[in-house]
Amino acid sequence: MANIYFPESKIDCKDGLLVGFNFEGFLFVVTSVIPRDEIKSLDQLQSIVSEEKFHTFKWYCAGDPLILGVIESVDRNAPASTEKAKQPLPLSESTEILEFKKDKNIWITIEK
Image (cartoon, rainbow, N blue to C red; front, side, top):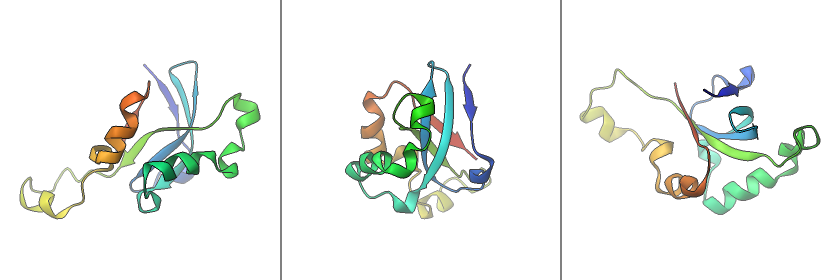
């Protein structure tokens, strides 16, 4: 079992990347959510995490922030075939994200 601490201020976020810290394997602290529309490429993902604004807790956390996973909205009431074709591919299923997370030890997917 893992503990995930998620900021209340980000609970209404739609789709995006979870950025934060991993402590002792199964303790995660999400400090920010990068909205899906701000994600352009894998190179940009790496540079976003390196931005100074994400290093607020670096000295307290004894490490660099990580991309921990994704949060995505899921419409469980949408008809399977017709509505699904109109909606964009879930962030967790995009080719770039699948490639990015291949060599990660942990990956969190939050569906809401």
